[in-house]
Image 1 (cartoon, rainbow, N blue to C red):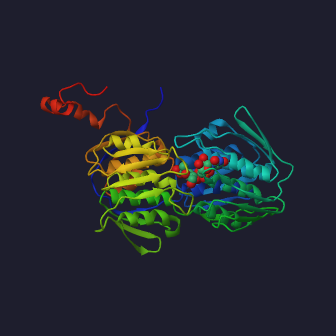
Image 2: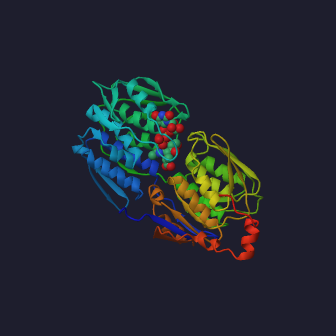
Image 3: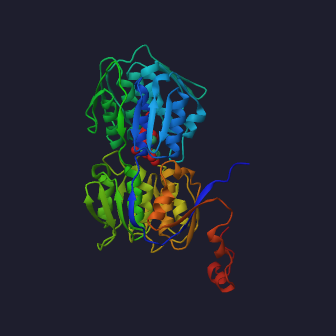
Length: 455
Ligand code: EPZ
């Protein structure tokens, strides 16, 4: 009998008020953890969020032979016994960022037998750009029974591009960079991702003795070195968690101060919220105070893009806010065109959102949302449903919140500190919407128009 899953029970329509501390970045932490394998000395990483994905990555590093401890937000990674050159399907299924182990395995062990990562709710998640980059460095690989078997005699620097059909690849840029730092000669990566997490990884590797330049410009230059050393590092704050709490403050008519907001990393999200009509001020450099302010709230027309464009990871949360914004908004998703599993769930809460065409939705603002039972399908869809439930009148349940636990540290504690009424419970069949099933006779007549409702 599988364990009952967790859900959030949320009583909405209460403004979030107060101060919230943004945790360390999940998407920066994960590649840093595999990059620590590139040295044969221990590294220490601080401000690491206690997330399901971080715990999964710890298990992966231990599987590979490293010794890892995690106390009070600090990871100690001792890679001296790193010698396992395989990553099994069950580890990969648990978290596709396990694929970041491939670069360090090739760089230090000369081979990698690694499961193809599965797809997920937001798309099929191919790895062809990663493999193309490795091939350019001299790696040969073949696929059998769901595994990639890769090896090389030596990694040799070269000039290569990581452009793909939906733009460049964050993961491939991380992976190929990690292979190139110990290659012979110099590697130039054209069309490299420019996300803040790439800067974080390049600067982390440089603190280990790597020689990387151009991070953030789209063209990375990596001069191979013989050896890397252990390092101490503090992870940057999570720009997507910051976006999530900023949107939640606005959707609930709140007044929230977020500690740990890096303006450049969040620029496109903050610009969109300013266009929407939010009032923002900065009591300190990395501290954002946000309210709805007095300006008229306007619909938005957003296109997600690689950094510095609007981040795909904040798209579903913004959709929840636009669902309550007068007028008609549009979101075009160019990174993961199927990343709309949150839409039918938001519509269960009373939103009015429809697919305009492939990869694009049209959002007609409604005056209010109403509590209901909804289900998370992935990490950011879950975050969007939490935002909507916090704004909705009445009680909502957000089910399958193990998705949310992957990327949000202490979500219910942080929200309760801001005044939310939110409880983590085991999923039950009770559904807050059930009350409406006992319609009175006259309601029945009006609602169903006296005829049988649509099947
Ligand atoms: C990273 O995923 C993030 N994950 C994602 O965040 C984020 O949505 C994504 O970058 C885009 O910003 C982590 O950092 C752990 P990509 P990644 O390779 O590296 C296609 C979250 O919610 N592509 O930049 O896997 C791909 O299908 C997660 O925190 C190829 O075609 O993303 C997509 O359309 C979700 N071939 C586009 O490129 C490849 O070999 C961008 O993907 C690789 C990717």
